[in-house]
Amino acid sequence: MRVIDLSLPITDGMPVYPGDPEVKVKIAHTYERHNWELRQLSMGSHTGTHVDAPSHMHPGAETLDELPLERFFGASRVVRIEDAAWPGGRGLFFAEAVGLECLDRLAALQPPFVGGELSEQLERALLAIGIVTYTGLQGLERLPAGTDFMFYGFPLRIAGGDGSPVRAVAVVEEEPVEFG
Image (cartoon, rainbow, N blue to C red; front, side, top):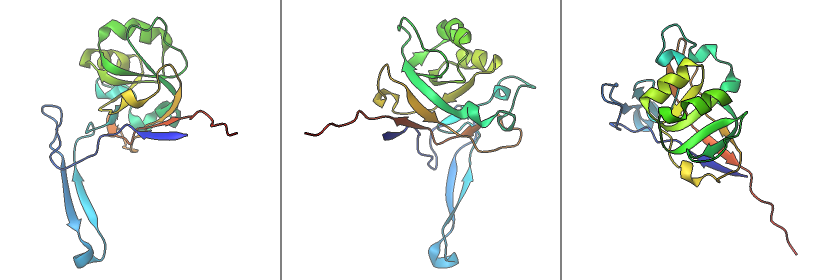
């Protein structure tokens, strides 16, 4: 198997959505002074690669800590807008920018989560029907086309959380190598 990291690194001063809190990563303790190293983090809940709970855009909707853990991982596939059919029963990811033109198809399939470069309108509509969204992903083009992979994107357990940075990972099964 091959493990592919789909996450952006969290760095001091990294770009954020306009109006979101600035990202600050500072060394608070050092080995020399404290005998250990510790960083202080300050950032918004939608920093870098992150997951959005329905409550992010809809008052009274489910928060991260109300969603079962099963909603944050599972069999997945990268699809393209022009694909004739998208598979059901799995998470769907787009390696291209997508908008409301995909909503009806996604709503009919009811995937547990959708990820990629989603327009704000599509993200809002998906969250309204309870579909978790992942944004800020990198490297989706490295995933095999037309093949399922396992996706893992667990949020921090933030009470009442509207979103959380995640370490997004795809696990791809490799073809067995035959010898001799």
